[in-house]
Amino acid sequence: MIFMPEKLRPETYLHNYTEDILNRIVVGLGAPDSQTVEVTHELRKGLKRIRALVKLIRHKQPDEIYSETNVVLRDWGRIFSDLRDAHVRTEVLARSENSRS
Image 1 (cartoon, rainbow, N blue to C red):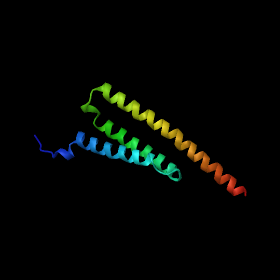
Image 2 (image 1 turned 45 degrees about the vertical axis):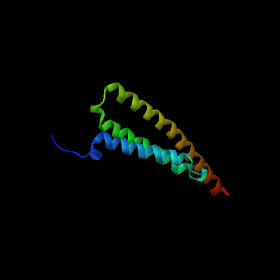
Image 3 (image 1 turned 180 degrees about the horizontal axis):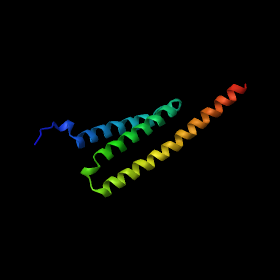
Image 4 (image 1 turned 60 degrees about the vertical axis):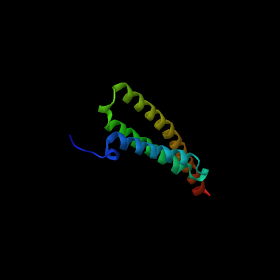
């Protein structure tokens, strides 16, 4: 058996990495309104990273747990995707109005 330090084990790394991303999300949610576009982008990136890591260790979990986790993360990603789209549309409209002035 190969010795692997606890902090390098996939499940420990996933837990620590996920906790870090979730902490960033919580901090980002309290950011000033002027930073909402950047925070939304970071939230989406964080969710994508967590989903990728969950997929990497999928073989170590029962299929039901993977499926549930994936669906929850996917649905959260869709919510933030819609929010991001709204931010982009607002910026495009603002630029369009500014260019007309």
